Length: 193
Image 1 (cartoon, one colour):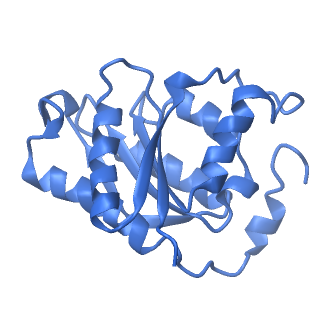
Image 2: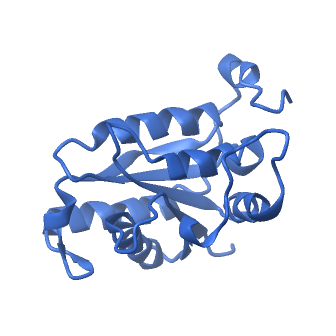
């Protein structure tokens, strides 16, 4: 069996991004579990605001292809106003069922404050609408500016949680997909497919 390849999508555009640092720690867990991993840094792509009439061109096609070709994903986001970033939302809008159907997805959020959970709930709903299999295990890093010592997580418990997220994505990457639901058939997406 081929190695499981995981793509970690960074929904932050900051130069010193805690989301990126946390995703790199999750990718350490991916490698510990025998998988391969790469960071998809959205700063490197020119993704216009999603327009269904213009979809599938330029960098949006590249991002969608890299997500589609992954065996599993980790989506990472900073928390903005109780939800996930517009940068990640826009990237996800450029994707659809072809990229997510039956794919295992792990979720990670970082917050400047103490309550990063709602962003994870919102991402979970989006991924489920795209027929992805979202891990029950997730990683939330509150008060993130105090959680890192250089590029390493200072808190052992959080470090373990993030590493386990990477390992679980590999362990469950080939889980048998659930049968389609009525809701999945009704969610036709922007293209009206």
